[in-house]
Length: 156
Image (cartoon, rainbow, N blue to C red; front, side, top):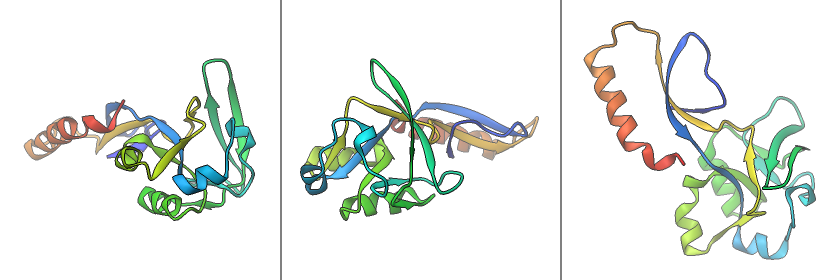
């Protein structure tokens, strides 16, 4: 299972659907650091998956405009649970899939920062990836069906 923008041609990808990303912060952090739009977030505050180089480009958009935001993140990691824990400890504003913070949003411990803005460029679709195989085994078919059924709650 992979969160990605696109998938390499030699792999078989079963698209489960789009994944919504947002900017989230611990409620205490959000109360003391208010941003009207994402361009106001200073360098060294964002917590992001790794980019290609020291600066990172994400696309943010609302109903009226789209902006390519280049930033130097405070922290990067491929491990989304680590990014979430860093955000929960008050280290900054994290770009995370919405499904990762649903419980914390309901409890009020996390707030969405700049809620009118959405983010792309981080991998915006969830895929089931398998090696190319013209006749997949029964085990692969069963597992794919299981994942497709049970991962629907993570896609928009």
